[in-house]
Image (spheres, rainbow, N blue to C red):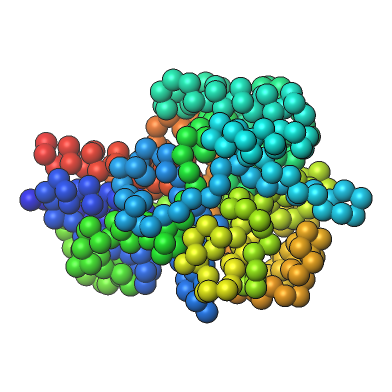
Length: 412
C-alpha cells in the first residue's frame, strides 16, 4: 500500500483522493483552510443557505455523473430556459425563453413573444443540434476563436448576442467580452441542453461533503500549515513528512487569476419571480447595465430560505463593475438595488442584505489560445480546474486524470 499526500481539500483534491483510496492506496488530504470545498462553500446566515458565488451543478457533466449521487443530495432543478428582462419606455418587460425541446408548449409561446427574431430562434435550434451531434469530446475540437466570434460566425445578430448570450455566459464565464474559448462555450451549451441545473438540499457545499464522507474524516487534516517541498516530501506544521507521492491540488498562481465576481444575497418576503428560471438582464451590455443575472434559489430548493422567506441572489461580473467604477461593496450594493428596483420596486427597501461576497480569483482565464484538449500541468502531479478549464467538469476531470497517472506511477 503506497502513501499519498494530497495538498488541497477542494473538489479536485477530494475527488483525486477518493479514487486513489479506492485503488488501495493510503491517502491523506491536507489544507490550510478550516473547511473543505475550496470555492464550493456554503454559509448559513439567519436560516438562509448562502453559496459562495451563484453555483449550480450540471447533471449532464459526465464526471459529475461518476462522482456524485444527486439523489442522495436531494438535488432539485431549475426550469430549462430563462426569463429575460428589458426596460422599454421606462417600463420593465419580461420575456420567457423556454427550451422548446424539453418544454414544447412554453417554447412555442416564448417563440411568439418576439423577444428574438424568428431567424435567431432558428439559429438557436440549429446551434443546439450542432453541439449535441457526435461524441461529447467532439465539442473540444475545431477552431479556437472567442465565444463572441463563434456566435457571429454562426449568423446570430449582434442584438441576440448582447441581449441573450452575453448576460447568460458572462455570468458563467465571469468575463465581460465573451472572449472565452469557443470550445468551452460549445461544451457548456451542450451540457445545458442535455441536463439540468440543480441545487443540492444542503447547498453547494454538499458536493465536496459527499466526497469527504466517502474518504473519511480521519483522512482529512484542516488548518494545516502545509508546504510542498518536492514530489515526495511535504512540510506540515514545521515537520517534514515523506510519502510515495505528493499531489498538488491547488492553483499556485491563483492570485494572478483576474476573473472576479460580486454576489449579493438578499432576504425577501416573497419571490420576485413567477417561475423557477434564472432572470437574465438583457440590458447589461446594450444599456451599460450592471447585473448579469438574478436567481431565487429558494424557489428551486426550499432549504435555501426559512419558511415564508425567499433568497434572492444577484450576480455582478467583476469586469462590468470595474468598467462602471464600482470598486467596493457599498457602491456595488447601491447600484444593484437601484437597477433591481426598476424591475421589482420592493428591491430598493424591502430586500434585506444578507451578504455581499467579492470572490477576487473566481476562475482561471480560458482565452482563445487555450485548446482545452489536455491539461496544462507543468511538473509533478497537479490537478484542479486551472489545469484544464474553469468548471466543475474541469476540476473533476483533472482529478481523474492525475489519479490514474499516480496509480500507474506507483504500480511501476
